[in-house]
Image (cartoon, rainbow, N blue to C red; front, side, top):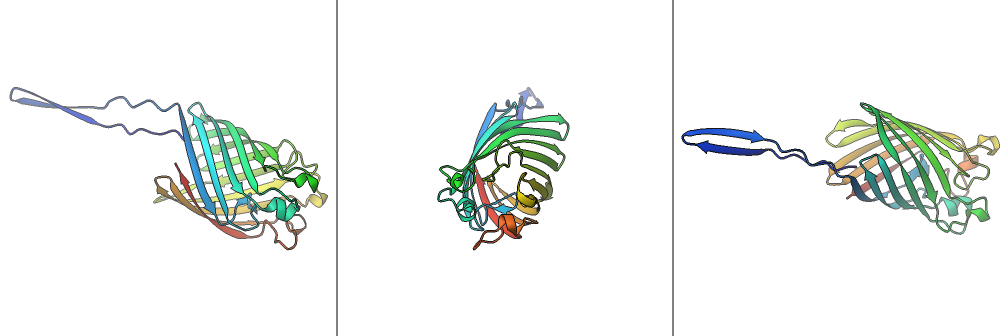
Length: 257
């Protein structure tokens, strides 16, 4: 997220008598900023987290802020409206998700990097604990990226999104980012969510997604994602709502500044 300053070539010409000489010099590049701060705002037709709808297949407005230091340290916050706590858990309150995260990124070798950190998913004033357990969830994570491929592992430090006795829930994922040129990118993704101590392992599922994104420049981007899962009706479907992990697609637009 650090800014890059384009160096400007300066041409100096000195004339001595009838002889002229042209001399070209490039000044030293400006030092890299010690830190960067960015903001983002976007809308999506359906907010999917690990391919499971968080908004009961309705649109979401999302905003975020990110701070990064050139040492590799970063922190950020992100928020979105949600529906699942009220629609699926049956709680009276809980329509907002606020994620707060921080970590460290570094390079192991050329084109080989790592990212470790912690994220907490907070649902302010949610009353899920009156039905099951509180929805607030914290995870630790680690990721390795080699070239265009990233593998990531996340594990909850306590109960996972309102599921009782679910400490140690884990998500393993692999994704690849293909640059198609012209600002287009294509990202296939596969993940596996496991939630321990649930009857018949009903909360476990595998998800697949494919995202086509377009960077229009000046901070504006758009995306179209298709996803599918094998999420079980017994765990992810509550009448009169459909299975939150059903096959679907979502479009989104985001502006970063």
